[in-house]
Image (cartoon, rainbow over all chains, first blue to last red):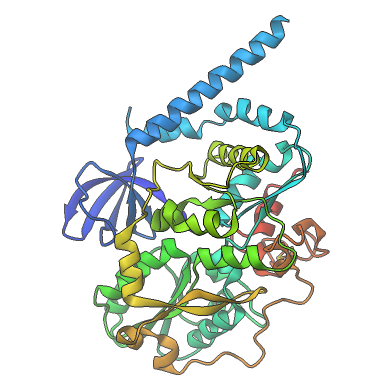
Length: 82
Length: 365
Ligand code: SF4
């Protein structure tokens, strides 16, 4: 039930805003988040932005995953050689 | 790279394989039990088949993490009773619509011609109230911290006088404490709910470390997020170091959480002892409206009363054991035979996040 959908803010009007994800637009509320700007990615739950998405952290997670993935691929490659 | 394409890459199932292989090959030093308390985690775990790749002796328990599954039938009966009254429009999240009480459900009440409407946001319910000034519009307020924020903000934003709620919100930390203190508790770590954690932050769980020496990992909802959490908890259980609460969902969850959301919640609500369906009362685990907001309480305003025969545990259903990890859905004789998503006997078969429903939907045949 705590589903959250990442969306990008495209327009802000006081505590209301328009957000977009995958071509779908939605009107959202900003009551629970301070300092939102147009262009920010936010997590939407029941029509409210509940947290900002940290792009740097998302990239780091992805980088870590890549490393693990590459290591895994190499391991399998090594074991094949043996 | 845009945030959306980053998220898509994290979602890529191929990327899970090396980690899954490593985990599957790991030989445990001793049997371990890890619990999550989040319906969205359970759905993701069942869908990705994560239990099938766990090493022998590692049990992954779905705890009481589905808000509509733990919503006491008392509160469902209040909602049903309200919907039966003339001049009322009852609004609810979709998850709650089909949850059975002993005699009925909101779905059945609607089928009888009563005004029950499914909404996506509490603000939608307020809109319905504005559009229907001569009706009493009641919103069934279920959910954990994640949902309590939006509901509190809705109530603080001056809703019209014909708008009220049936309060049935629940808090996760008191439930964790309950799970650790109950008799026979033998858990080795918690996977902590990603979106509840946006509100609480990592700090909100430090009592696990200090009070219980219990490891916890805040995890996102991709299979990979969950695998990483399991691996961290296995490492913590086996390396003999002091237990830590780790945040592996930093792309959304911060150290201190969302203070503004917490302030909104506690401006409108205060903690009360509250009943969890099939489990019983957990101290300070619910939210009741503060006196300044009492006029928004439908139960008070309309004098709602439950039917005398509110029954939490449906005959034959073992949901209450399932959500504590004391039984698996497959141990329920009704699972998949009498009780199916089309005709659920107990609350755990209703929502896509209920343990029985997720297990049924993604069962390996
Ligand atoms: S399968 Fe149905 S009856 Fe059995 S425990 Fe789950 S919800 Fe209850």
